[in-house]
Image (tube, rainbow, N blue to C red; front, side, top):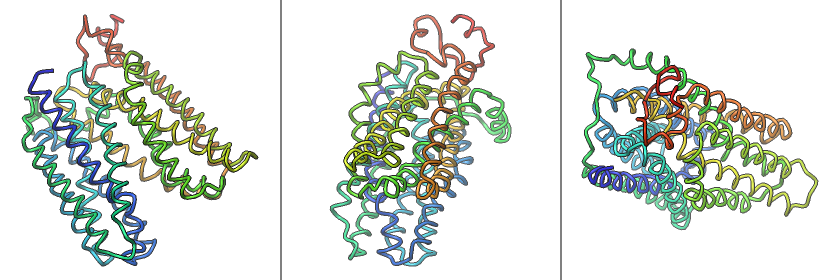
Length: 428
């Protein structure tokens, strides 16, 4: 990594921390703000959450193409200004229409930030530093969300609308501050695809023709559906209804998840980056299967309430361990599967898969976790084991340097977008 790339990476990491810090101020309190503080009811609050997902699904296909053609930095700056406008509007909106419109703007801006920042990390890192860079990104995101949520919790007052307006104003200010920080980034030159050379339709056709990327996208959907899509919906409902978990214990469980990520992220990095990526992901599936068994004991076992609470908190902690293993594994793999110049397209496609899973996950898991307790645990236990199976199958599709690039760096170059049939795989 050159000095210029290192300087750019430091600003990117500051950007990740600031954006997560701003989001932490409002994300935990969005439902309460819309339903109770603004008095718009649970239905409108639910629609706001749905609008976030729909906005992301609409803009992400276009975001990938824009990143490829214009570069990630201009797209990120536009997304930040959009998100700032949406956040400020949401804090001032008093009607259902105004809240939903503001949520759509904020959701669109937030959705585009993710692949733009990921592509900047790819452009400013080498194969040797990419896993650590994505691990740092994930660490800072969780730290920023946690600190922002903690401070926001001390600022809000459900009897005063102005306190929530302040939170959304702070979030907007963080996005605008990030615009200033990122405007100083000097990105290294990276290939861009001109419109005559490759149409948007052709880019998506090429992506869908990459069997390894398609398999990784399917695996990614299951990962996000079975874990992230359950955190604040099915799993929390299961804990309250089946295990009798109090709201304070639920908060402790969420804190345990964040704490595990913060503590374990760099402890597991050296272990993870020396092993095959497909086997690391397969191991995460097994860890999450144990997490679901712990959740099953909490809600379906016959132990004391203290034991049930401990098992439930352990569930969230085990999920955090798996997340810490995934952050330096999956995102760099997406980058290595992308042909030269198309990292933005691939990052946006994977972000689209993630958003789809996060939209479907709560819709499926929420009702099941609240009422179908045993089927809920069994279903997601099987999904976790499915992660292991899908990861091992993906490993057979990857080249040797895509699956385990580190031992090969002394004698080979990591081939991006390759297939197992290429000569580089035969050298394994």
